[in-house]
Length: 100
Image: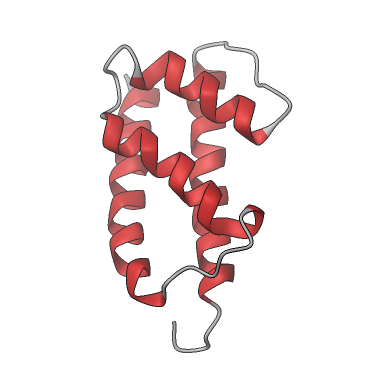
């Protein structure tokens, strides 16, 4: 990032994915867990395990959480463009699930 706020960008990316995952679960009338890890697990059980969403995109949600505020690690700025491409793919799949 030009302003050096890679962590902030990754945090916002994660929350975009998180809220998309919440929307997908809500669309299926599935109770939303109270924790982030619970939501990620429920999302995996509901969409990734049955094959509705590719496992690589399911892992992205977990990876983005780890890279955001919760890990204490500083994400590599060079990884941000790839994360953004993957996030776009994640959101596209969620839009398709919700619209069908």
